[in-house]
Length: 182
Ligand SMILES: CC(C)(COP(=O)(O)OP(=O)(O)OC[C@H]1O[C@@H](n2cnc3c(N)ncnc32)[C@H](O)[C@@H]1OP(=O)(O)O)[C@@H](O)C(=O)NCCC(=O)NCCS
Image 1 (cartoon, helix red, strand yellow):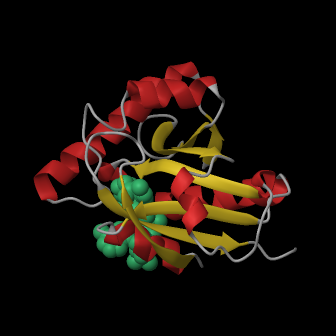
Image 2 (cartoon, helix red, strand yellow; image 1 turned 180 degrees about the vertical axis):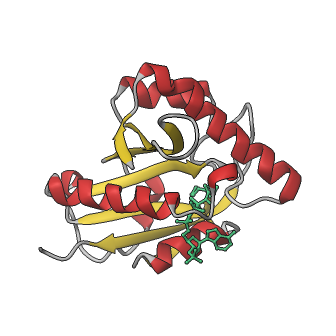
């Protein structure tokens, strides 16, 4: 499997993954609560690309050569509401690696791609001297919370709001994984 920074030519595939997740949820019930055309959109993809913060996981054995299974945005930007939580320790911004807008193509879920992406994200944090991973998800998102807990994340608390300014409020849960020195 290859984990790499996305390029302009991956933009279409990343939006395809995000839209497929929104479509899956429209048909099967809300989990992460994304809405096609509202969030995430091509603007979300392009903004992350332009900052060099969009990452993809490719599986060369997944059928088509180099099929992208998952994508997500990784940076040091903590949403404003993270200030409300009692994190394990007070870290400098550069010591915290944050994962946003992460998803696996619904047709490729439950095959270990989500966990693989998370382990590359964790390695990236170690390799760049970060001390902790922080992220959030919607409280209704049982799949992602099960995965994060299995991977050693601890739940901090909840917050209700509209961080992506899409026009509706959701309840978010914040999670963290403090990295042990190697
Ligand atoms: C959450 C998500 C990233 C998991 O990706 P994945 O490739 O299916 O994950 P994995 O195959 O590595 O599974 C890891 C763990 O996730 C949990 N999980 C995954 N799918 C699940 C499901 N349908 N029901 C319950 N738990 C599930 C399980 O704990 C699983 O471990 P297990 O296989 O030992 O039971 C994927 O479901 C997804 O993209 N969901 C939509 C977008 C999203 O919720 N993004 C996350 C935050 S916004």
